[in-house]
Every structure is written in C-alpha cells, then in structure tokens.
Length: 65
Image 1 (cartoon, rainbow, N blue to C red):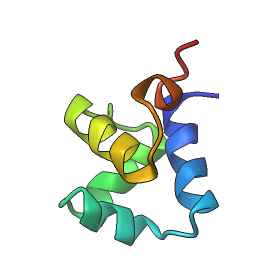
Image 2 (image 1 turned 120 degrees about the vertical axis):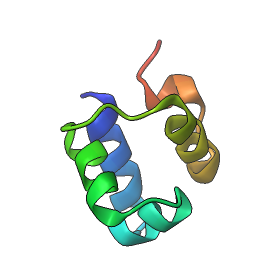
Image 3 (image 1 turned 120 degrees about the horizontal axis):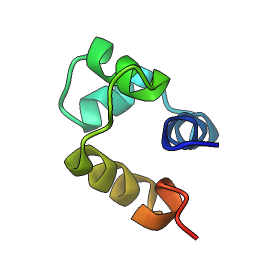
C-alpha cells in the first residue's frame, strides 16, 4: 500500500467524495484526483491537513512503522 491508496481508503472509509476532500484542502477537484491517483506527489501541507482531518498520525498516513 502507498500513501495515495491510504488517502483514498481513508476517504472511502469516511464516506466522503473526492469533491468534499478537495474542498477541505481548498483545491480544485482535478488537482485532488491527481494526488489520490498518484499522478502528482502529495505536498506535505496537504498530508498534514488530511492527517488532522481524518484524526490519524502522519506516520500512519505515510505508512511509517
């Protein structure tokens, strides 16, 4: 599993749409889709915001053991 899959799984587990999460990150849906699919690297600020939003650690999000 990678960070992009973890981000998608968290979104799906929380019954959120890509649009809802794009709004949380204050970005366009197309940009968020590229992050979630792994086409673009997720910036650190977005990873931190997502970790806070989902109430998980950054280590969990990036699969650091």
